[in-house]
Length: 413
Ligand SMILES: Nc1ncnc2c1ncn2[C@@H]1O[C@H](COP(=O)(O)OP(=O)(O)OP(=O)(O)O)[C@@H](O)[C@H]1O
Ligand SMILES: [Mg+2]
Image (tube, rainbow, N blue to C red; front, side, top):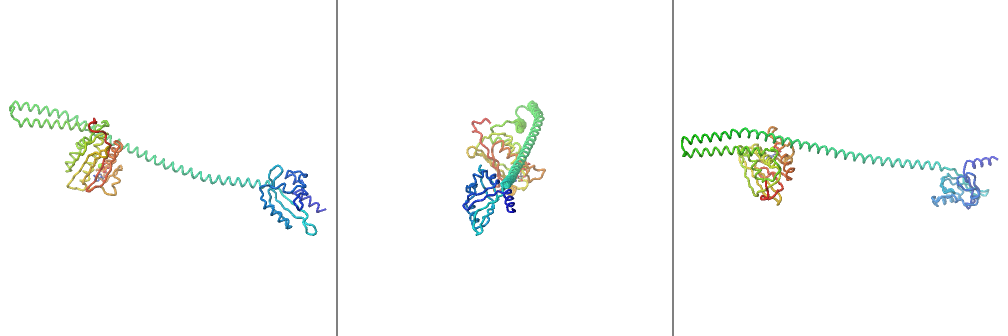
């Protein structure tokens, strides 16, 4: 009676089946039919492998048979296939049933459906994997974004720096230009003030000549010579004023000009300085070369170089002060101006810095450190050329290389 109750309890709570020694089904309970989707009629007499899932390897069944044939209980989780092709998982216990002689008569399999928990575990695992993947890609994405941001930051910094530098350059050029403009204005005023007295002087001289002629006749040659000389001096003064005015005229157009005429302009400003400081300038014009740009700017470059040499000579108080300036054609399409002094040169550790703005070795009252910077800007930006420096034997050598504009005959500059 009790045995019957046990049997019912097991059958009601589990999936139960029985097979003979060949694996042919001899009994199934309702739960078995429900989970497998087969009717009892379909199952009884069929081989138990009717619910075998193709994913399960043969070895698993081999192991099952090996175990139960040894009269041992087999316990495992098994993946099965229902009639409609769906998968179900069961915790399986197969028990070999023996008769009094100890011979196996049949097998009873008691199963418990764990499909839901397997599905849950699987989806949990999948979610975990997804999360992990998300996590790693997130990390990577954050890393990439940070990298990009950093890059952007860096280029932004660089761009700002560049813009600030550009603006500063513009300021400097404006400053230099306004200085030139102010100087031009001043020279214009001086010219205006002097022209009147100069012409008055001419008239006075002429009057004196007339009076003198009346009193002494026409034969005092010395006097007339002096008169002519004075007129020449007045004319020269008047011309010089015009030259200066021209030089400082900020509206002078870009033009083709000969390097020698730019040098003449520079000398107009620098001649007195060179004489005062007993500096000899030796000019060697190998070729008459024409270049294009702003002549006053180019003259300014030469003035800067001459002024720098003058300062260097004074600093080392050398006696024999010579500057050699050579102008020649170079590489067919270029003009090369080499400028060499014998003022001792530039210290090795600062020679790379001399073109930097505000670099100076002079006292604040003597130099701003803009001379060479501006000079290089003029040669590079306005004239498409290069300005380089080197120490040579006794001093410094500057090399200005600029494209030649045209042949002399064709040039209207
Ligand atoms: N011919 C030279 N001999 C020796 N040192 C020189 C010579 N030319 C330039 N230098 C060095 O290069 C530095 C920079 O020259 P740069 O003309 O740019 O500025 P600066 O002459 O000091 O000032 P600024 O020209 O603005 O009045 C000078 O301070 C000087 O140390
Ligand atoms: Mg200078």
